[in-house]
Length: 206
Image 1 (cartoon, one colour):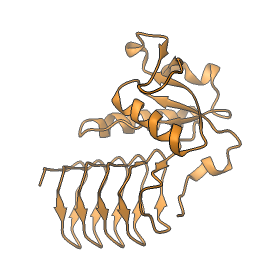
Image 2 (cartoon, rainbow, N blue to C red):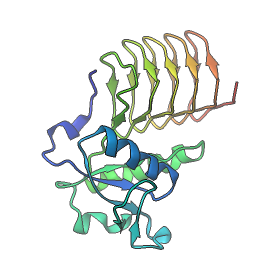
Image 3 (cartoon, one colour):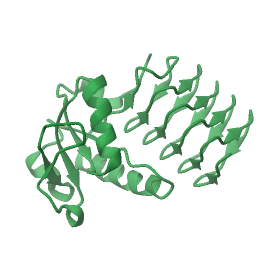
Image 4 (tube, rainbow, N blue to C red):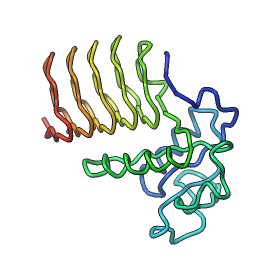
């Protein structure tokens, strides 16, 4: 597997902060704790949602500190810490994009997680991607930044998936497709070969 982690491949740190304290943050903690060498040191949320100084993800016994995202770099500099922000949902594409861009402005590099149970073929994969089990990425497919591929999708050969996109589960996308920024694809959607999906489009279930 070849994953383009951009600047993260040159970072000496493996210390990681996860954005959020809801379901997706718990899932990210679960997968990363089992399938990666990252050291999760805490979680971060926007100030208005900071209602507890600590967070214990389900299945964990560790009481992690929760940091204010707006001033994160003051105490947790981007030279020493990495970020991961895996929010999902049709509206969450926009929110995830905003958090990703703000993190980049602060100077952070974002990791990507690709499940060892996914099938990948030397694909180029950007930052802040969350690719879960049983995804098949055929050869010569490119994945942009800030993309979530939930479990069980088929991503056809010679296709392009741009930034800020969410595939739910069991989407079948044939070869030579082009999915443009901000798109949302519902469960069991089927995209025939050569199709282009425009920016911010929502493709319904089935």
